[in-house]
Amino acid sequence: MKNLAAEIPDDKPVAMCTIGELRAVIADAIGNRKSSFPDELLTAEQIETEYHTSRESLKAAAGRGEITLVRGGKRRIMAYRSEVKAWLASRPVAPRMRKAESTGVNIDPIDQMLARGELRAMKGGR
Image (cartoon, rainbow, N blue to C red; front, top):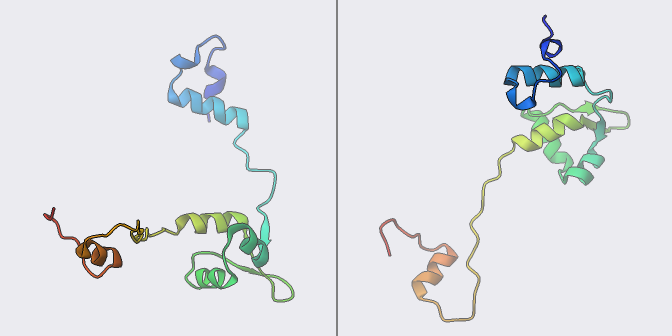
């Protein structure tokens, strides 16, 4: 494989480099190496404290195949930090509708029913 980083002259301005040349320089600088630290194995208690996720959620995710759990001694459940982060990042959050706050001012009865969720606003209304 040809080393593009070695072919770029030292006096060439960065603004004149192509994307491929910049990628080659960066890859050469970091050496395309993996982290020297192995992925950390966390216990269910550590995951619960750090990521606010219960042991039951971990077991359910493992049952769905979303995360791999490792069984340790004394019935201890563990998971790799990178898998926990990837799993949490993959979980979408559905926004919830907030109820209207009362201001103490008399509100139209229809607006009150809308705020309680008893009615829905329709398109084309005012």
